[in-house]
Length: 531
Image (cartoon, rainbow, N blue to C red; front, side, top):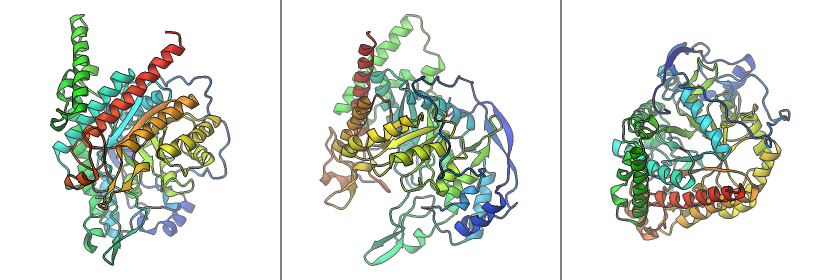
């Protein structure tokens, strides 16, 4: 169970380590984040062992592991927990008080892990199945979590809509659905400009609640390291509640008819979901009548993992632990981390950090990505070509998807790399409404998802999942959908701190669209096999 603790082992986390050359270059490249040698004492932390030891999925003979030698861009030096400091680090805040920063990082270093290494390994195995077309990833949640909107109802509603979407996708695709939340740590946001200007006043940009405040005043925009402590506490509390929901009966399949949110109940999507839920309920009744038990854990609980963008490297380093079971480093701030479009430089600090941790990783890819560079980046992050390690999250708009994605798929295939292909139909479809607010048209999101499936069908590859910015709240941030949100509606319930999110009704509508494509793909493969 991903959100339940397994048998635990004690292990020591070593102090921050670096070789002499890394230490000297570190202070010159990223001086604000330098940590004095020996200033962080070894600590003990509880880690999880694997609940089971399933076999690694069999790789089809048609896909052979990459055997090419690392190119010149691959840093072959030994990785260390702080070796990222010797690289150029983009999108990091400049903290004015170094002593306070180092004090906070020492505090975080002593805190328990938020997630367990064994859980991350289990997720990697599931993602390996998605890479082979035997599972489907549903990854969703807030654009950026906030301190002021932190409450149990918001967490519950987002979890509930993900449960609903998972049921729809699983029923249509007849595939296991891997549920991963952009939750319990998705605070930091990259910015295209380090400064923001309003009415002639220029201030540092808002970089997420774990860095600074969103209020447009000088005091709020000063990076405050104490916010990392609050972000840790909120992440731990969020995951604690998610664990309770996932394992305490709330996610039981017998409750499938009770997951509908109140404001979707009398909508087209709510009606469609209710019909599907009744069919599931009838199937469960048949199983019970046939003598099949419904008390099995798979019917009572669900696996649920957490994820966020790996952006604020000092925080990520402080929550990285050495796992006693595998002897590998895991970033225990989340099960899954991804590198963004702005920080995926081959010789950058973020890639350097990520190449040394064993978590499953995502790579955000736009239409700007060169196919050869993508192959090189995969080689850096996954030199052993381990299935489930790399998820490529494409975000480029429908038209670019049809033109650019085939070249990326072919390049990765030529390199012999095993990856999970996922669509992020949100980031390539952001527009500015007449009122000045950012929004995303539902029709454009749907078109990109369709293009994603079309391209994979054309290339003979596997559409492995979808990555969404969404919420269980009844917001009006994305226009369109069957319960049409117009430009005029945006200001009524526009609550996002950053980018516009799908509301629950729009999310469910998109799930039905994807489920239909999965169903057609399943039926098509059965026809090909002669069933």
